[in-house]
Image (tube, rainbow, N blue to C red; front, side, top):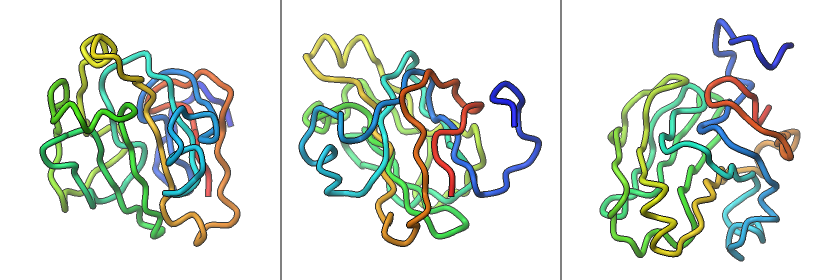
Length: 161
């Protein structure tokens, strides 16, 4: 499969980059909760953009009300994912973030989920790493995460079941 070819249908087995940037292993995230895999396994994307899009088909299961810095999704295969923008950004109380979806909303790959002001967040002294966590990873022993690469939003596979 070519990384440059858009997939014509969503098979539910692949998760695409939710933002463009560079992927790193979750163990390299500068936050002990994420790097110790306390919430689950995954990766992070050091973002080059400011718009988070749905990485696959699913249902919005959680929106970080007030802080607007995180969104959870449940996928058709039962996987539960968390997309968390920045480290310790909850303390910004929503400033610099805008949620674009509602809990219970069905989304498809590319649906706009969340917008953030990268320059503002960095100017406040926060890391803008965007963390992707499979919170029920014990249910998916064969899951693979693809790190150490530049990724293109909605085009590059970052996780496969």
